[in-house]
Image 1 (cartoon, helix red, strand yellow):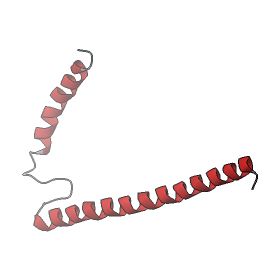
Image 2 (tube, helix red, strand yellow; image 1 turned 120 degrees about the vertical axis):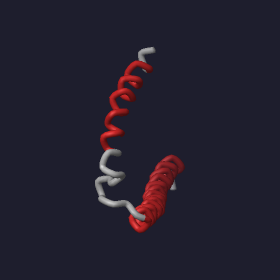
Image 3 (tube, helix red, strand yellow; image 1 turned 180 degrees about the vertical axis):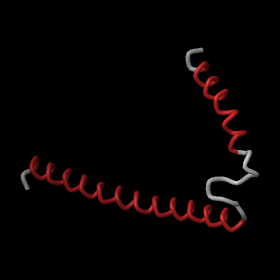
Length: 81
């Protein structure tokens, strides 16, 4: 019940806000939203996530190489090579 009360208060507070934003004949912050705007926004989302995955994988690979190098140094210290 402690979790449910704030959620219900937030929902009750946001319902009038949604109708206020819908009162401008369907125009959002960008202005009139047509097919071209939606297409370019969707393309931007796809490109962003593609670049994000590539960069995050590159960073993870670099960090993994550093980790393996550090492990190899510790192993050489223990073995004595």
